[in-house]
Image 1 (cartoon, rainbow, N blue to C red):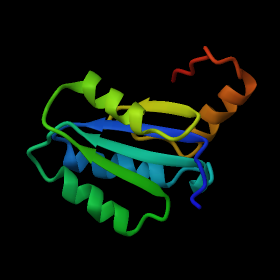
Image 2: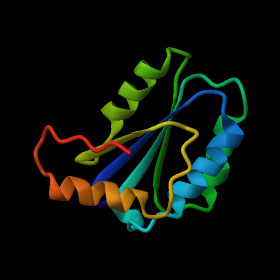
Image 3: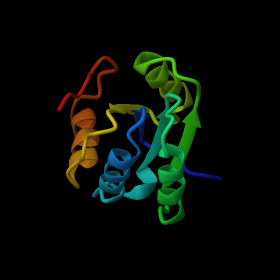
Image 4: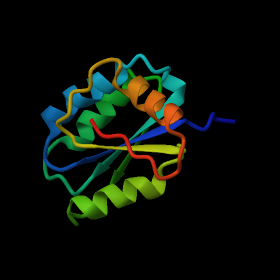
Length: 124
């Protein structure tokens, strides 16, 4: 049985295949243990090679990565679809052009641990 992740990183994307490649690389190099988070890439109908970038990344990645794709509906719809698919108790909405420093996810989880209120939101 697969472990339920603590954190779901929802990454909405549109027509940013090459940028997404670097974003995913940065997410793979986090100090947070790979089993504690999942990555959900939600593609808003990209006409470029986004799906190929995700598949290429998946071949060398040992963590949980899911790829969802739908016809173009805009960022709100795309983020909501990722939130619906998320399994983690914590959700991090992330843009496809954010290159996270290695300790970013660990710091995000730590902030939620220090502020466990259900209404707590961590920014930055």
